[in-house]
Amino acid sequence: MVNDKAQQAVQKSLDGVTGDKSTGVSGLVFVAVDKNGKQIAASASGKTGLGDNRPPMTMDTTFWIASCTKLLATMACMQAVEQGKLKLDDYNQVYELCPELKKVKVLQDDGTLVDKKNEITLRMLLSHTAGFGYEFFNEKLRDYGRPVGFDCFKADVKVMYHMPLVNQPGERWEYGVNIDWAGIVLERATGVKLNDWIQEQIMQPLGLKSINMFPTDEMKKELAYMHQRWPGGEGKAEERDHMYREPLVAETDHEKKHIFHSGGAGGFAKPAEYVQVLATLLNDGTSPTTGKQILKKETVDAMWENQVSSMPDFARQPIPAAKPEQTNPAPELYPQEGNPPQGWGLSFMLTQEPGATGRGRNTAWWAGIANLFWWCDREKGVAGMIASQVMPFGDAHVMGQWGACEAAIYSALQDS
Picture (cartoon, rainbow, N blue to C red):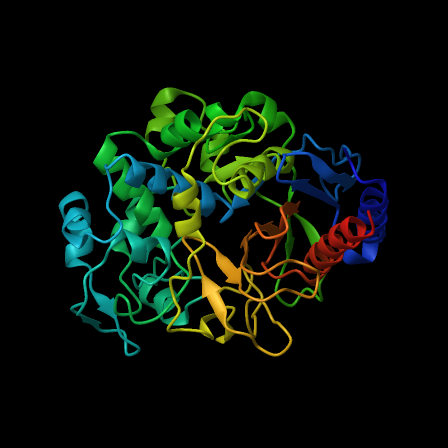
């Protein structure tokens, strides 16, 4: 049952932003669930776009979820590990499947390439320690790609083949195309395309029909508009062309065949369905609504283990806006009072100590570049997502609502 106090607080908070034209946030959707998959609050606010006569945002609105896809791709890889088709720590298997990774070089600060000193494993790919970066977060990678440039949102696998490492494998954490490569490893090991695997092994058992790398006609009809605050535009937002267009315009099987199944950024979803994936993780890998097990409890536990214990401050390094139209600069990823040690699981950040919003220990969370954020708190049995379609990443208005709405959920639960 929806918690009335939480529902009212969330709706009022969201409406305060979407109802104020000066924020430039046309609409938001927020959903939180418990470990039984029951909604604690589910609110849609505002409109799907800033243009005139845009329809209202609803719980059926479809969002490009960008890097929120990484969790799904990782769950697919972990299913393959359970089935004995993949190994987390066998670099020979990785190289057998992806000889490109055996040969990949490391980009230096001076623009030269050197041999890698360490080997790449699937665990490294899933924990962002394999050495890959993103061109919108890494200036030397951005510059190396020019005059042509890299575009990770092109749905073209050739981008992966041309991108060097930016760090020696295993030596530091850096966010990048690692999980795109993990998806390629899965495809080559199983002969199954990543989206097909996700549909058959995750979405169908969970009874979910609106999470897909190739949105259905019904999802496309409900698609939210993409928005942009341009650099130098004094924070003003406007509608823009979609960031991830290829899967949206591909209609025939022939057209779809040439589109890369990006484990890093390829998904589209309705937030109310995405949180059912989170509820399954809260419930140790078994869907609380269908009763189907998609991961073993020990696999979920392994995903929550800190993979970077030797790097307790890994996310306190500042992130530059290498492409300011795509991301704002960030001093750190998740500031916490007292600077407690930080963790990273298999595809998500772990706030190892309780957060200011009320979340419990070892809460997983991550985001999508168009300002979508999810969290999954196994200690307290709560998970949720806030979704928008606003560029660049790190929008203060959306992040403020994420914190406010998450806090409203915990406050209401504490009082109930």
